[in-house]
Amino acid sequence: MKSKKVIKKELASQYFGKEAKDYDHARSEDVRRRAVINIQKKITMDFLKDSPGKKMLDVACGTGRFFEIYGDREIYGIDISSEMLKQAAKRKGVKKVMVADAENIPFKDNNFDLVNTSQFLMHTPFYKKVVKEMTRVTKKKGSLIIDFPNKTSLSYFFTKRRVANGTYRYYNLFTLSEIKNLAEENNLLIKEIRPTVVVTPMIFPKSWVNFSMKLNSILIKILPFFTYVRYVHFIKK
Image 1 (cartoon, rainbow, N blue to C red):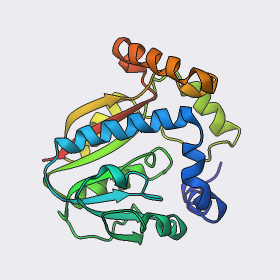
Image 2: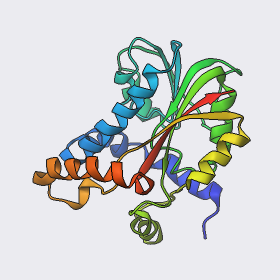
Image 3: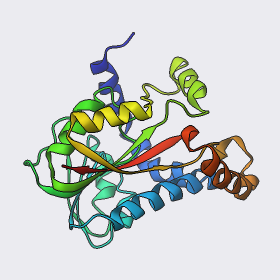
Image 4: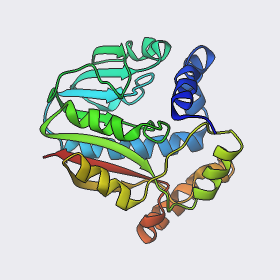
């Protein structure tokens, strides 16, 4: 079995060259992926509406594809890939982007009103250090927004199989109890938790995307415990 350090190195080297150049296109060309990304953005926007302050950090921001929903905030972004950041730097409202390791965020304590990360914690073996660092740079009473793949989701066994066959290099899944423990360890208050989808639209034909989203809008009300991902809005105590 590969060590966590080796896994981290492989993940860091993944987002260069063609992968960095095609990152946004690969995630937007399929209408089913776009539908899920729109849900993720809508949840984040709702959390931001309830979060005062202007200074915002996006951790593992990649190409900055979430920057557009941050409004008139002062946006900072960090990522391990310099090539991804070249694209992020072109986004509207960007104050500064820089190459940095999320386990050692290069900003002082209590520096940001809001800190967000999306689709990153699932991939890093050192997620506890990342959450600790995100908390450190957040001001008291500031907001942290983090997404957590759900260990009790219907996709659990498919995800484990993809890890086993090498499709995913590494993947964390979290129970609700584990999320609550992370909050307690970092002196965070859980303000709100939002589910995304119960059944991924990717299992349906593209032409069925409207049906799949209507189905999910029903299932998420009945079976929120089985959501694919939980988005969590934390407040630093």
